[in-house]
Each structure stands twice: as C-alpha cells, then as structure tokens.
Picture (cartoon, rainbow, N blue to C red):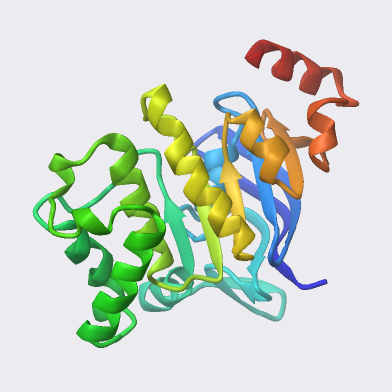
Length: 252
C-alpha cells in the first residue's frame, strides 16, 4: 500500500492556541478520505498544513514519501525555500470554500494560467486539456465567460477543473460546497464523485455526510485538534465514540 499522505504527530499553534495536537493520519494513494467534525476542530488547518500553506510546529507530514515544507538533517528540520515549497505545492491541488478565480480572466484563461506559467506546458496543450476538463464538469459552453457571469456552483466546478489541470497527485477540498446554495451542491459533488471514480487521491473536509457515506474509503472525525475516531464510512452509522454520536446527531 502506497501512502499519499502520512502525517505523524502533526502539531500547529497560533500563538498560545494549540489547534492541532498531534495528528496521525494515513491516506492511501487512490482513495478518498473525508474529514468531518465541528467548526474549530482543526480540519481546515490540517488541510492547509498538507501543502505548507501553514507551517507545522511539530511532527512530520509526508506527501507521496516526500517531507512537506522541510528538509531533515541529523534529526533537525530546516524549512525549504519558497521556490521548493511552490514546487511541492504544484503537485497538490486545492479547492477552497470560496472559489478564488481570477475575476478579470475568462474561465478558459483561469484554467490554463498555472499549467502554462508554473509547469511550462504549451499554450495549445493547456487549452486542449482545459476544454476536456470543462467538458467533464459540464461547462465547455462557458469557456469564454467571466466568473461573475457564473453561478456559485459553476464557479466551484471551474475551480475544480483548474486544480485538476495541473495534473496533481493529490486533491484537497476545504468544504467545497459550504458557500453554495443548497440546490447547487449536487452539481459540485457529482464532479467530485467522478474524480474519485478516476482514482484521484482526495482529502475532503466536508459536512456532506451523504457524500462521505457514498464516496469515502475512510472517514475521520476530528474534534478539539485531535483525531477522535476513524474507519470506514460505517462509523457514520455506528460510531463508537459518544462525541462522534453527538456530532452526527446534531447534523440530522
């Protein structure tokens, strides 16, 4: 079994506030892991540590066998350069709650920007890939539109296509449906289901319990900066910890 994410005793503080208190987590390659838990439990912070948008204060975080954000020499960690961190990040796609599209660029231009300027892919190849991805997310007819001309669900689907265009080995989703009107949630989850079926390794912070039950290989419940419970999606129906039971009953 190849591990795409291997987190060992990961800690993160913001000043005096300890947000992550020794997270151990394994995400096998080609699987979907859903992180659930109340707001403030550290889920999004952990996600941001995976691609070094946040620096860990202790522990080790590996993606595909590579230590993220640091080099280790004689047991001492040294932070890598911004350039090396950007190189690591180029292999990790991230989709945020807010869509973060460039408002002054068309849908097509949003998608080809990073492949051309970060990965050095030719303009023609980038455009061809972008149109294929827009076809997959049902938005080929919107290639020349600007983000403000799209619904929230459409913008989020473009954001997913933009992340996938970089051909990442890992996709991180930070509550990708939380900013959407309820009737638009399904279209984004459908795109994520398709990605999972294609074998993309995904770590998803979500409140969509139905999605977790249907798509996840592993569900992890976090609370107060620690992993309380993890297992197959069966834990959603038969949790063993009272805290997990209380959280799930509050969602129903």
